[in-house]
Image (cartoon, rainbow, N blue to C red; front, side):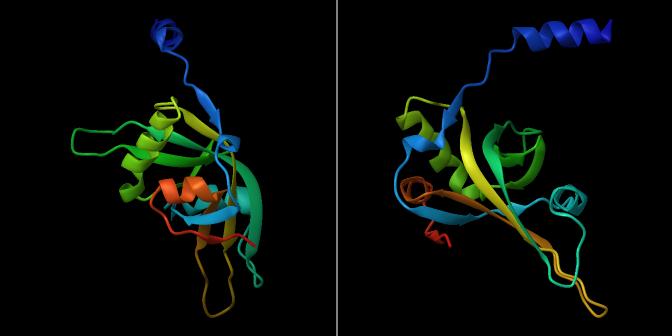
Length: 152
């Protein structure tokens, strides 16, 4: 019965629009994001920590996520392969919604981006966390009030 109810509710939910990042212009910029606290998610994609560290570039989307409670705020997740890698900074969330609304795409999932997972080094004495960047066109980086640096 629960499965039937869940399928019914899911089928009633409006489809989420997808909007390609190609609508934005300019050279690529790197936007710092807050990496997932669940290091296992990042490890499952980038591989185990090692002496040289890791560096992996993969396609990703920016996905709006509703608040989990009344005290919570909206979040924009960086997702790849169905997993949350990171979140945009809270200060960028209102700009994200305003930027997509100006394109007539309120609440859409922004597709066609690249995420870079890096870091993840480990030696006998210390280890470094996995970090995440998102590479976006310059016009989107500035619309998000982020001063990204030029992507290499």
